[in-house]
Length: 81
Image (cartoon, rainbow, N blue to C red; front, side):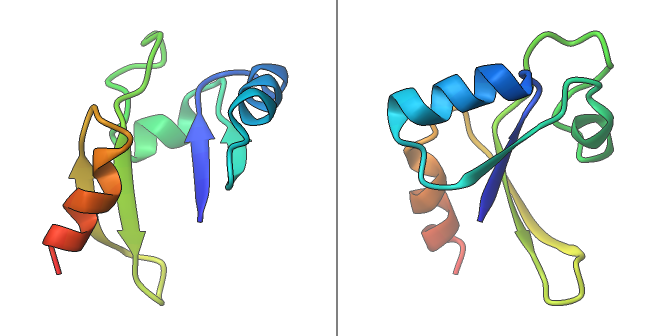
């Protein structure tokens, strides 16, 4: 599992250390990946929407769960199975 944020590498590092983030956290300050996955509408968006993506063995998106509640993402994922 991994996370991706539009914040800088330094901001992500500080966040991960402060909250003992358990996953690798990638940085997407240009929003290239966030645009491709629909987490931002434009490269000018300051914040990205929170999504959980479930990828299949072949790398395709099998599910996209949109939630503003980070704690609710796991519950929403479990409900879908």
